[in-house]
Length: 122
Image (cartoon, rainbow, N blue to C red; front, side, top):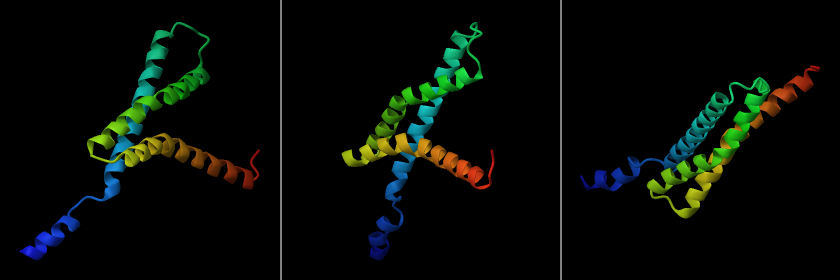
């Protein structure tokens, strides 16, 4: 009875990083969603201009993603604050939200470029 209660709190508690992972994922999802919605809104309002081609839409999405970082950081920080994290943990969550997805994409891009370079692709 008492032994189970003594170790029950340690065995059944969630890991400390689980709330940070959830907060970062929520912030990144909110950032992507708001960037997509901003891009769709911009394209819908300027659909009559023939000058904007596929490259223009890609650039608009990149600018929208950069501007949506405010939304992502706000959502991630709010989620971390809701889980009663300290100020340092909230700052870590906001920085990780800003770095993880672009860093992963950059890492894959460098890996693909290095592979193509080593194999002698032109």
